[in-house]
Image (cartoon, rainbow, N blue to C red; front, side, top):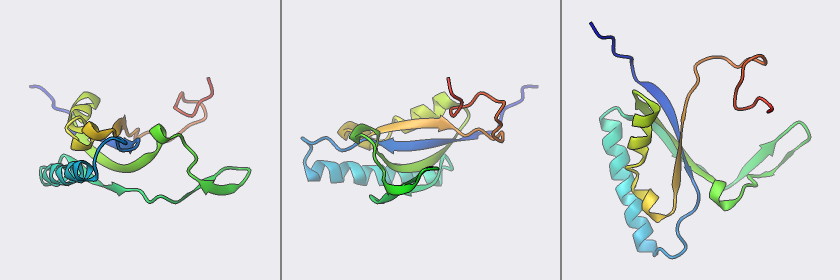
Amino acid sequence: MSKHASPAEYLLLSRGQWDGNASREDIQGAIDRFYAWYDRLVSEGRIGPGQQLGMEGKVVSRQAITDGPFTEAREVVGGYWFILANSLEEAAHIAAENPCLAYGLVCEVRPLDPVRASAYALTNETPT
């Protein structure tokens, strides 16, 4: 008897900026197709809540709270969603269907780690 693992959550980050050569009509068409794609995936239970991020923000560090975000245009996070999939590969294939990719945006897909952080564990935040 085979045991099927239950789907896991993956964070989808929308990054970058629209192609400067694309018309507003083309971009709006991609946005409209995105919401149709998103609504379909929500109804199928394959994507969860998320949304576009506002343009303002603050950067908080031990030194100060400053206006931000201060990232390069290609690194700007414009929105986030949660994908429900059986693997990182499946989540990436779902993200690859995003109509906005054709107009310059990039999606980053990351697994959510259910394990609590530890100073003794190797993580993204561990110095190399």
